[in-house]
Length: 135
Image (tube, rainbow, N blue to C red; front, side, top):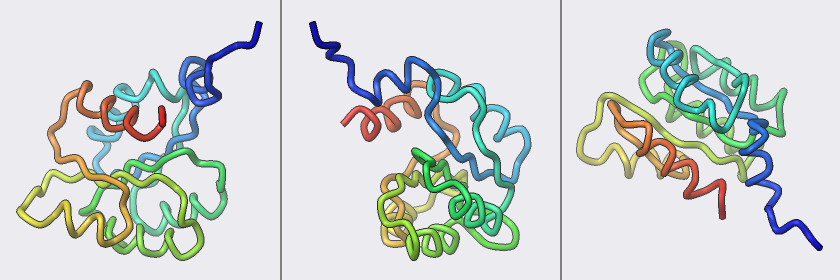
């Protein structure tokens, strides 16, 4: 009998998705780590856009990125644009506390796959992730 569990579902169950959290606020980063525990045991962490770009180059097997928009050195929009220069397929989800009209569209235009505004609930984040991971 063939196991009908998809590879992604198995990865989620085994908590071995490779996730990059890009967040310059330590409290927000720790909260995100807790929120994604069902998907990933030990995420990669970047505290600015430059680190995010570097980590994406060094880890082409990342499953998705949670990209903060407002960061020092290189903001999330610019980091996403640079990542898209060498990786068109990586899932990148913009996340920001500075949700203004047009921010979603600006995030998508920069190359993000989707957008979520802070504060968001566990179920909102899980829903966003599952929308793409369980395709």
